[in-house]
Image 1 (spheres, rainbow, N blue to C red):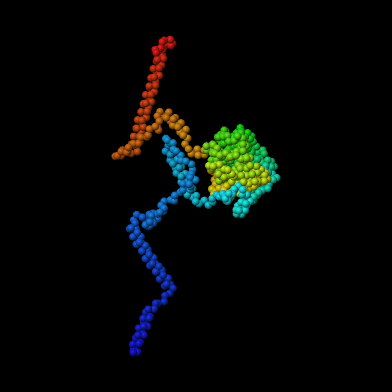
Image 2: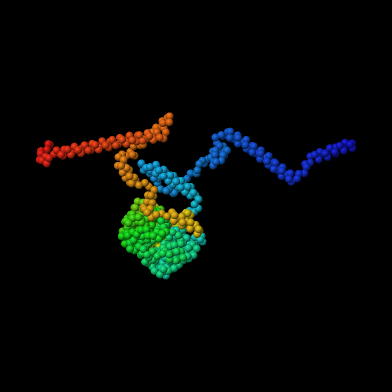
Length: 594
């Protein structure tokens, strides 16, 4: 019995020891984990490979390449190719109609026109595709039901908007040297103010920092920024002066005397001035040279504006006409009768399509410059003394001490009431919209007023052209690039795209002269195209010989016909001379056969 118990105990003890797992160290655990991971990964890869092979064998035609990578998928792409572009966006960035290639033009001209059309189409598609990345949208003032937006005051708008936008409504009380004219820089960061009695100030209006301030001690008629915020021009009583941003006088241009109005052409680096003596003068500010001086023969020129699309100057005259001028011609490009009385003010939109004028007949007229025809005519009880158009097409009209803003002036239906209205302290002497801001600057007899006009400014700017947030280094680089890309004044005209078109009249004239010299029309018949032959008879030399042979034969036929016509004409002349030689002076008394 005891022996049996001992054997059973020994057997149980041995089995318990064999079932117990040996203790593993920490380095042995990590190695086992790595091995297990590799084994599982190998298994998954092998299973994936077998699954891929099976799917590939089932769908051999569904394996596609996308961006140089092989995608083993059995499904088809639900949206193949590039994303479609909406037609509205394409029309928004359309760059005119396609050019028609004239008949008989050379191969190089056809290739150049085709290449330019291809590049233009690509740029249009890219601009329309990246339109989604534009961060801002233009907004407008919307009232409640049966609420008129023109009754909303500026104080209410400033209280309703955020602090930064509300600070854009302010008044400068400057009653000593007024009334004031104004001009914003192209970036919209700086403001120029000029009082009638000689006060000139340069302000960074958003931060309210005064850059410079001075009194020129004589009458100031107009003021204008030049290509950067570092220089500005002042039309004083006698001559034209150029100052820098610190108020230091740089130039006194005595050739430009009695200047009343000024316009700066940024892409041509030219300052256009209109004087009291009736002269329109152009000054190239990059070299300091007078480009042109034109006598308009229309008297005092105190109404002036420019077309931003083609840099043509618009002048309003006392006889109710508006004339369009270019520095290349001594006569006006267009002269149109707009009002029954004198023209008081005019302005042109940024696309160069519409022109708005106001006259002493108390009418406000909108013209389509492309057709030179009026679109709408509005009657204002007191007329409009000053006009200004914003980047988004809002029209501001000043009547006495009231400023009215109109929306969609050149739309299909005429405008019945203003979009906004505001009364200032004195009589208005100047209006200007701030670029890229919903702000309208008003210069009047008691100083300056900055109005908030929702929806007036362009929300997205071109950083390569006019960047409001550019640094000093970026401004230097932009100035150098703009000088290198300066447009010559000879290219100013009504149609800026005329340079890229073919002069059809001169082409026909040259073709006619060529026909007279050769004796035949080389474009009248299609060129001979030799057929290809075998056994080495279609080499370049033999093809050229056949072409010349056929050309010589055609030329001989044409020359033969011309010679025959000449001989026939000479025979007719000789027969007429012989008949005249046989007649005598007494033949006139003979009876003629009836």
